[in-house]
Length: 383
Image (cartoon, rainbow, N blue to C red):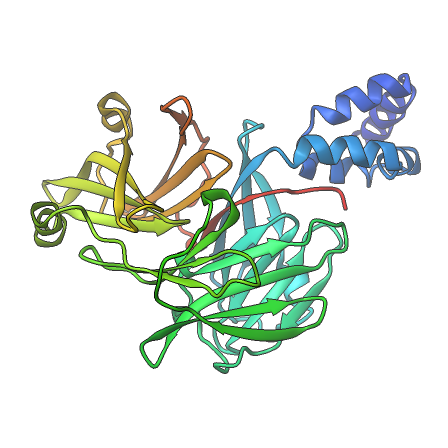
């Protein structure tokens, strides 16, 4: 009883502060914290719902980049963990009640596919459906099956899909993915406003794309040659790219050596080389290559400095990764598991300055949990 009384007293004392000071304090919080503050009392709810506050808050929050990790303890809970490059701790977001609106099986396996803005896409394995969740409005809906029919979770590739929220605050979005149909790459696009799919077959040839004006979706990933589709204006057919490494020696070095891992995304590939250490492996180098819009081949971008690699080079048994390139920055996250313990590494490369940064992450307390998806996201807002 005393605890609740103390909490109410603190909330009342906070609300007695000048409005300008309260707003300044709220602006220093991450978006999940602001949403929690909105539930404290009517005064804070009114303040946070003010149009001017929302506009200023959105300008600040949309510049943040988030890393989301979805983990699930079997038959217990469904927790989305989020970490922002503008905060210093993980935020827990329980999505179980939201998912239950469209998934009626308590033991259903749900996987996080991708996220952007306030929209998160999850895949249901048994129902072979994609579920769109808006974490702010709490809207949940199933996306109609694509023209290829229902798809299981193993059919989705992170590097072959893209979620694009509408620029307005309507909550609408576009979801695109590429798939080989009869050996030809086809782009499938869903529009949440019309609730319809459309298809476009990619073509061979040369395009006139600017790097910032197109997106890259990987139809097939291979060390020797990948098949990537570049998507520009809706009036220009998607273009097929087949990036290779520059010469035969480079091609052979990436293909023949089995100590390398490749992670693809946004027209880039991250190449991680490891060495054996007893029953585990240890990272010894990380390189990033990007597609040259002149030649269409892989072009060397940068390598992570050796001093950073030495610090992050812990023993691992299994490692997966995620890569995004946006607004002049390349972000990579590596998740490794060693004897049941998970380790998460977030690295950012600033292309203009040529500087790598290691974003230090606190423990996400993943031990004993099942990893069910990981993605970068940006553009979180109050609307």
